[in-house]
Length: 209
Image (spheres, rainbow, N blue to C red):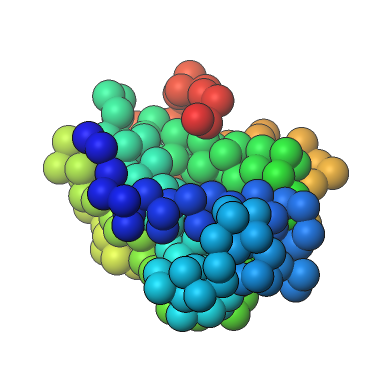
């Protein structure tokens, strides 16, 4: 579907902001620089965004939307509830770690804005919690997990895996082989609620898109 001219311009502004973030970092990014790169006046940029903060907020919101979509699609793939819980944690961790390693300037901008946006941080935590809760419900209904308080269990799982999933904490693990640690945390949690012993034959993480 062809984008309307106004929407196409908005997308170009955001794409240019990301490119300049990689080059200059968040603090040196300006609306004037974005406008110059696009060959337009900064007044035209202000037709779409109130200021630089508005542009960066939009970038963060779109990033979060993509993350939530990725988590949801992973959770809906075939497999047991335990396998899908493991896949959500391992694949999202891999996706985040790769972003940190391959695109550090943009990741740092995301991380900093995340710190400044408690509403965005809460939205992210709630999205992870909701996916974990739904998978726990499905596992209980399938007879895979013992009946437990799903809200409490989802909160525990979210907290236990925060080291591997939270954007602010990912950089603290940059020098460590974290995949085995994340897998062990998930397996330990699942063993506490499984009807049958948890085996190590679950799905391996696949490269994130």
